[in-house]
Image (cartoon, rainbow, N blue to C red; front, side, top):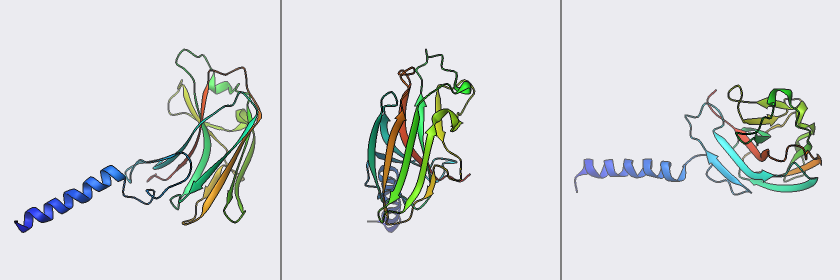
Length: 181
């Protein structure tokens, strides 16, 4: 076999591995939910841990394991999504749910704790009039923490005061980190 052909085939295999498995610092994640690595060219939110839907219309508590996070500064928050026909006024922040989020490391050290009504949180929307918003708390204390390599974490999420008036709004618990910006 020609040497140039073998070298080219080897390079193609590395590129294919990167595309399929996301060969990156984040590919070792083994906690709850699903990790998405948007790649090194992502301006923001390179790593997104999608922990799935949460019900903000009833009181409740859920616990999540976060294992082998990339060593980055993560923001923990709630992504709200209103159906297109909904006339929710995001700017008025009428959403009445109140929640608590706490992340503790495997040794018991609390690395993040926030609590309070979502209307008081920072509402990040990508465009005016959007039907999606990402809610988080700017600190200190805020909903951000530095994940350390090799550590495991537990996220405790509680709905303290439910919002039954906006049951059409879907909520998803997410952690976001990284990017070149």
